[in-house]
Length: 165
Image (cartoon, one colour):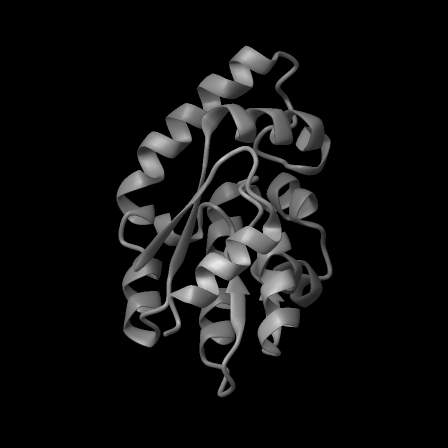
């Protein structure tokens, strides 16, 4: 959530000429509802069920594809185990808590899990808690890309491309 997965995925796609799928966009398109609407009308449990269905259909594509997952996707069901069976190229874009807090506070109205936060400190605590809970799943990634505050999207893409050799 807020690490820049979608931006990096799009840029990487253009650099290495592979198709890109953002799982959140795919889910919204398939169910003809925004992520916020799915969350609000169906609740988080159904949201995660829908997310899993879209993940499985996306992973079953025949062509090589860059896929950007939602921040919670690896943490539910056995999603990460399934992802690891299909590919060895799993990247965790590790972003500092402070940078996540800045980014997400400015985007909170578009993100159903955090739209209720009015205060940056409350949001920061929420993000820290979620990172703590999700870390074991994120640590199952093949590669950890550390994104300091001054790293550009191009820098991140080049670091990912360097792992291909």
